[in-house]
Length: 285
Length: 267
Image (spheres, rainbow over the protein chains, first blue to last red):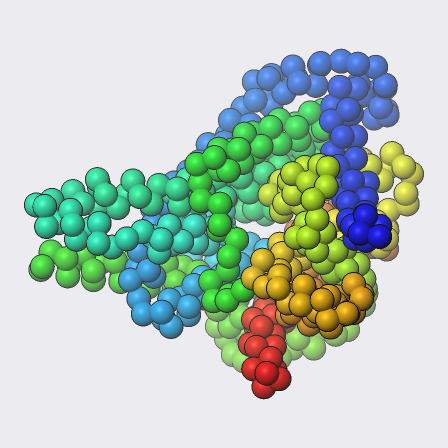
């Protein structure tokens, strides 16, 4: 009877995820070793060409550029987010809740809409240029939209909360007495920060960085809408293979390269990052 | 001590700066949805024209309807399946539990584009016609994970003695579930459902790849409007979307509070 209950509870979600999540991933994994026919059809013959082709400078360049953009966005999030996490952690409990909520709320508003806001602001005849021109600060409009700068701004804007939250959690966990103790023992404020606080918040920094880097690496909408033809990222390359070039095996291979990078990072995260970042602030459960 | 104060002021300024960076674009978007001027980002007077125009846009209204259908049906299925998953993981030991745990979290962490192309490939492979059904299946798949995470957090805080006590007092397993477990996890289930609806409502990537002809959702429609060029109508629909999502989130947060009050009164 218990066995029956056990499996009748487990089986429906397990089957659903098995069929619609695990199997599709296996399907594209297998497809990544097939070939593309002349008309975009799939030829079921084993090959490693798709992976070799990904090493071609043309495509590897995009992959490296994506890693670079994701890294820059991650570092900027860290620079903006770390001091903010400290600031929030220093406030009174009720103010903390408000500040954290204010940080998370925009994250739940539509991603497209938030990206569109930046088009509206950054484009040649957009708000930023109009304002700067009318104030006489610049003579000619700044060309920011459709550049890598715009992509990075969009990514930082989107994923900043992912950096702040885990760092905040790690700051909350640490014992302030350690800071006082190091000061009492003669360390300067900088030394106790550098030698005591920073190492103790490292798990938060690691998880935050991974949580930001992973979605940035696979970004599609941000480079598609804010970037130009020159700031193509691997997400766009995959989309092109599936919806335009009709080279599904190559697209599948690119997806798996991204997946592999992500999985390695997640293992690092599970090993060295804080695990409990899921708990939402203000959530008493 | 003086040095500390200077650092403190700097930190405060920095924090305000970051919050301004987060909110300014959203506020600008909302303000300019009421602007008369069509082309330039220059304020020229208040109007509600762009909102009225939205209503007469039949493509847009169709996409709203599609999003509602996808949102409601995927939320209903995902809430049931996600809750079942949370219960199974909380209560039982079984072969492959660790794998199941990983599979339940993976849809949240793998890049959306990978999930999108894998579902598209799979649908074509099993020859499922792309349309609303394929989008609903896709949305259920990632939403199971989100519902699971929230309900599981709620279950983790539950005292196992409650269920044992009910069983000792002669309740059948179903009665235990219906009268003890379910009321306890209900706030989590409802927040999970609201979260699932919000994510479904906002999703562009997965729908973009898995919706066929006639399956255009609101974000897909907004995307094609953005691709076509900046227009005040997009500001207007964006404003509505922002307010609607915030309402849902507030509701999700509030629900927890409401249930707590009910429980306190009940005891």
